[in-house]
Image 1 (cartoon, rainbow, N blue to C red):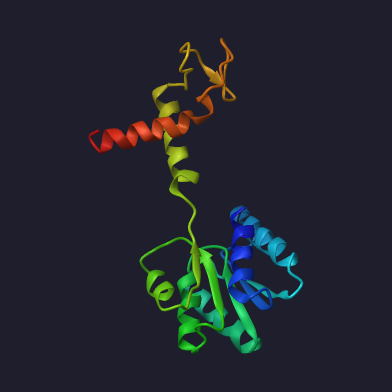
Image 2: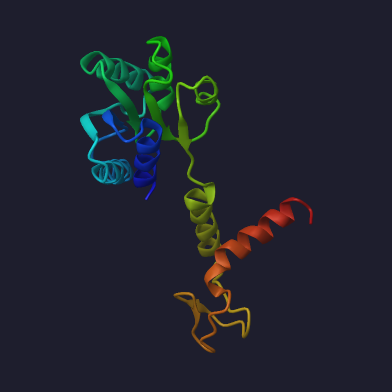
Length: 193
């Protein structure tokens, strides 16, 4: 899970010792909750790490900035800030302005134009990027299949595929990769190949 990977990155960045603040997008939003849970599970494997608080920033860089400042003020020995959702560059900005580059590790999600100056100056040690195919592309592809009335078919006999297995010949072959194949074909068509 992405949260657990972010937790391992935080442990690596901080040497596995110190206090960390968590800034989530919104309480009760499943992806944010899962990212927080995975992060805390990873930190629990390292007895030197301590979560000092969890706050909500509503995917706002300004709120993230204010929360980061508050975490640093309340915990002068803070070593990390973790954002589960939007606005992590607000924490990068707070770390930079506090003169704590290299002392406080910032881990968040998504590579955007706003994040990159803070990654380059060391305010943010990493930005964990989920791949586009892990979210939106599959949804669009499946919607297009449904809208067109198409169904994935077996490469051997042309019959309908159910649960990555052909209903007629039970061929599994590359059927499990039918989404990837269609995406590759679509990308090739866009590139004029």
